[in-house]
Amino acid sequence: MNTDDIGKHSAYARTMNDILSLTPAQLNQAADLKEEIIKLEKELSSLLGSSPVLPGKRKPGRPKKEIAATVDKPRTKRRKMSAAARARMAAAAKARWAKAKAAGKHSL
Image (cartoon, rainbow, N blue to C red):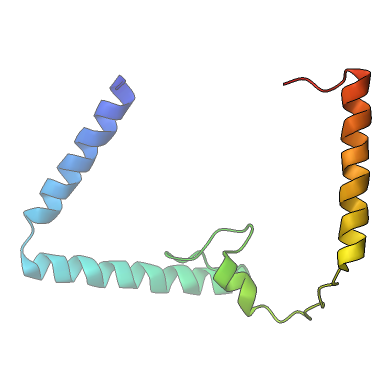
Protein backbone atom coordinates (compact mmCIF):
# COMPACT_ATOMS: atom_id res chain seq x y z
CA MET A 1 0.00 0.00 0.00
CA ASN A 2 1.52 3.31 -1.04
CA THR A 3 1.09 6.69 0.63
CA ASP A 4 -1.68 7.74 -1.81
CA ASP A 5 -3.78 4.75 -0.76
CA ILE A 6 -3.28 5.56 2.90
CA GLY A 7 -4.44 9.12 2.31
CA LYS A 8 -7.53 7.96 0.43
CA HIS A 9 -8.49 5.47 3.12
CA SER A 10 -8.02 7.92 5.95
CA ALA A 11 -10.05 10.57 4.10
CA TYR A 12 -12.82 7.99 3.61
CA ALA A 13 -12.69 7.08 7.29
CA ARG A 14 -12.90 10.76 8.27
CA THR A 15 -15.89 11.26 5.98
CA MET A 16 -17.66 8.22 7.39
CA ASN A 17 -16.94 9.36 10.95
CA ASP A 18 -18.32 12.80 10.10
CA ILE A 19 -21.51 11.28 8.67
CA LEU A 20 -21.94 8.94 11.62
CA SER A 21 -21.62 11.83 14.06
CA LEU A 22 -24.47 13.82 12.46
CA THR A 23 -27.86 14.03 14.09
CA PRO A 24 -30.97 12.90 12.21
CA ALA A 25 -31.96 16.54 11.74
CA GLN A 26 -28.58 17.33 10.22
CA LEU A 27 -28.85 14.31 7.90
CA ASN A 28 -32.29 15.50 6.76
CA GLN A 29 -30.89 18.97 6.11
CA ALA A 30 -28.00 17.47 4.12
CA ALA A 31 -30.46 15.43 2.03
CA ASP A 32 -32.56 18.55 1.38
CA LEU A 33 -29.45 20.49 0.32
CA LYS A 34 -28.44 17.68 -2.04
CA GLU A 35 -31.92 17.69 -3.63
CA GLU A 36 -31.71 21.46 -4.04
CA ILE A 37 -28.28 21.15 -5.70
CA ILE A 38 -29.63 18.58 -8.17
CA LYS A 39 -32.63 20.80 -8.94
CA LEU A 40 -30.37 23.82 -9.52
CA GLU A 41 -28.02 21.78 -11.75
CA LYS A 42 -31.01 20.72 -13.88
CA GLU A 43 -32.18 24.32 -14.13
CA LEU A 44 -28.71 25.55 -15.07
CA SER A 45 -28.27 22.89 -17.73
CA SER A 46 -31.67 23.73 -19.25
CA LEU A 47 -30.64 27.41 -19.43
CA LEU A 48 -27.32 26.50 -21.05
CA GLY A 49 -28.97 24.04 -23.42
CA SER A 50 -26.96 21.05 -22.30
CA SER A 51 -28.12 17.77 -20.86
CA PRO A 52 -27.92 17.54 -17.08
CA VAL A 53 -25.40 15.23 -15.45
CA LEU A 54 -27.42 13.55 -12.76
CA PRO A 55 -26.13 11.19 -10.11
CA GLY A 56 -26.85 7.58 -10.91
CA LYS A 57 -26.88 8.18 -14.66
CA ARG A 58 -24.53 6.11 -16.79
CA LYS A 59 -21.69 7.71 -18.66
CA PRO A 60 -21.60 7.49 -22.45
CA GLY A 61 -20.42 4.18 -23.80
CA ARG A 62 -21.61 0.69 -24.48
CA PRO A 63 -24.91 0.08 -22.70
CA LYS A 64 -25.46 -2.82 -20.37
CA LYS A 65 -27.16 -5.88 -21.82
CA GLU A 66 -30.56 -5.18 -20.28
CA ILE A 67 -30.49 -1.62 -21.63
CA ALA A 68 -29.41 -2.82 -25.06
CA ALA A 69 -32.24 -5.37 -25.08
CA THR A 70 -34.84 -2.64 -24.67
CA VAL A 71 -33.71 -0.81 -27.80
CA ASP A 72 -36.12 -1.50 -30.65
CA LYS A 73 -34.16 -3.07 -33.44
CA PRO A 74 -35.25 -5.73 -35.89
CA ARG A 75 -34.13 -9.22 -35.05
CA THR A 76 -32.48 -11.13 -37.85
CA LYS A 77 -33.15 -14.83 -38.18
CA ARG A 78 -30.21 -17.10 -37.55
CA ARG A 79 -29.18 -19.09 -40.53
CA LYS A 80 -29.21 -22.83 -40.04
CA MET A 81 -26.34 -24.82 -41.41
CA SER A 82 -26.99 -28.32 -42.63
CA ALA A 83 -25.17 -31.28 -41.17
CA ALA A 84 -23.49 -31.85 -44.55
CA ALA A 85 -22.18 -28.27 -44.60
CA ARG A 86 -20.81 -28.64 -41.07
CA ALA A 87 -19.13 -31.91 -42.06
CA ARG A 88 -17.52 -30.24 -45.11
CA MET A 89 -16.22 -27.41 -42.95
CA ALA A 90 -14.82 -29.84 -40.37
CA ALA A 91 -13.12 -31.88 -43.10
CA ALA A 92 -11.58 -28.73 -44.61
CA ALA A 93 -10.30 -27.62 -41.21
CA LYS A 94 -8.77 -31.04 -40.55
CA ALA A 95 -7.10 -30.93 -43.96
CA ARG A 96 -5.66 -27.46 -43.21
CA TRP A 97 -4.29 -28.65 -39.86
CA ALA A 98 -2.80 -31.77 -41.43
CA LYS A 99 -1.12 -29.69 -44.13
CA ALA A 100 0.28 -27.21 -41.57
CA LYS A 101 1.49 -30.05 -39.33
CA ALA A 102 3.21 -31.74 -42.25
CA ALA A 103 4.91 -28.46 -43.17
CA GLY A 104 6.18 -28.08 -39.59
CA LYS A 105 4.17 -24.94 -38.82
CA HIS A 106 2.33 -26.54 -35.92
CA SER A 107 4.10 -26.36 -32.58
CA LEU A 108 2.84 -27.10 -29.10
